[in-house]
Image (cartoon, rainbow, N blue to C red; front, side, top):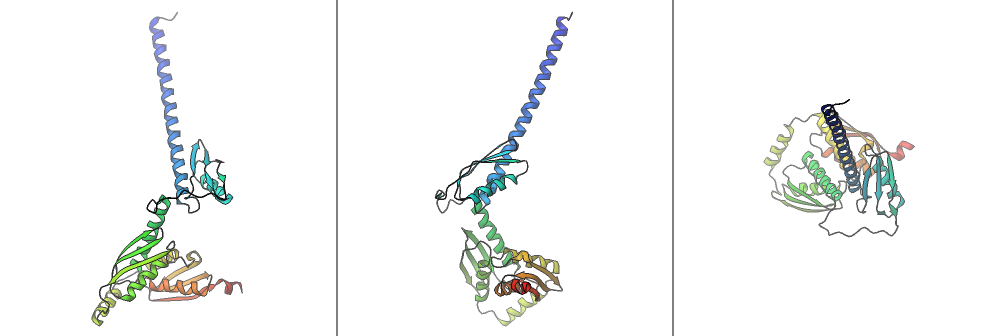
Length: 284
C-alpha cells in the first residue's frame, strides 16, 4: 500500500514531467513560428525586389513547409513567378497559390516620394555602380562627384577639371544598367589645365602600380554594370596592363563599347579584341 509520502512524490514527479514536456512543446512551437515568420519575410522581400512583382499587393503566409500566396497580378506568368520564388526559399516544399490573374489589374498609385523597398535597392545599386566606374576610370582624374539616383534618374554634382571629364562622367553614368536619364550638374573648375599640370597628372598615374588581377576584375565589373554590353559573354585577361577580350557580342556597336569600357579602366595600357566576335561571325 502506497503511503501518502510516496503518493506525493509520484504526483510531484508527474507534474514535473508534464511541465517539462509542456515547456519543450512551447519551445518547439515558438521555434516553428519564428521560422515561418522568417520564411514569409524572405518571400515577401523577394517579391519586393522583383521588378515584375513589386508593384502588386501580394500577401504571404507560411504554415509548416507550405507557403500560401494571395493577391492580384495582371498575368499568368507573374503568378507562376511568384510560386517559383516561394519554392526557392529553404524549407518551403509546397505552394498554395491563390493569386488571381486580372489582365486589367492596376497597382495602387503611390506618391513619387513613397518608393518601394525594391526601388530603393535598385537606385542604391545604380549609385554604387556609377561611383565604382568613376573611381576605376583613368580618365576621371580631378573628378569630385556626388551621385544621387531616384527612380533611375541620376544626378551628378561636384566638380571636374575639364569639360571632357565632365562629359565622360555623364557617359559612364548613362551607360549603367537601370539608368533612364542623367542630369549632369558637374562644374568645370579648371577647363584649361596647364601643360605642367597634365604632365604632373600623367607622371602620377604612371607611378601607380596596378596589378593585372585588379585591372581584370574592374574591367569585368564595368562590363557587367553596362546596360549595353552583355558582360557574361565576354572573357577578360590582362598581362602587363594589356587587356585581351574574347567571346561574343550582338553587334559591332556592342563590341566597340566593350573595348571602350576596357580602355577606360585605370592601369589599362591597351586592349586586344581580335577574339571578341559578333554572333553572326561565329555562326558563319
